Image (cartoon, rainbow, N blue to C red; front, side, top):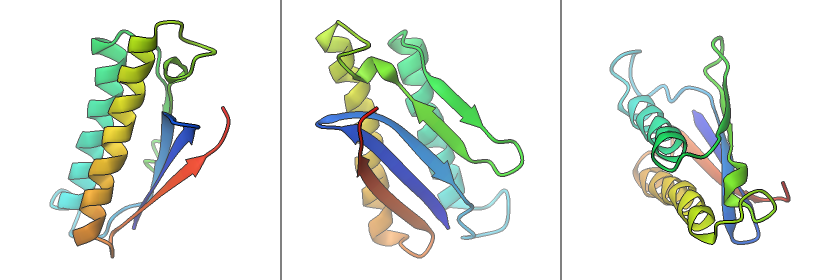
Length: 118
């Protein structure tokens, strides 16, 4: 099962942790793993390349666990409210899409939202 924990502080989404394997199908044919991987990299690349924000991320090569933190979503680290809103919005959109997937693939995916200060 893939486990995703999305982090927010108040109303601002600022990061997430992805771990596990879906087990929906064999490696290379697992549509759940493919979807989550593609969505995750879309979020990282959009924030880092399109918005020009620093993204702190770590990918564990052995387990494929991914940790992502984006300080630019938080007012203590980013003074531009438009950029904060955009960064947080992309991560919130990731969370909402995962929740949509969860409706059909609950045996292979678990999604939590954790409200914690950065």
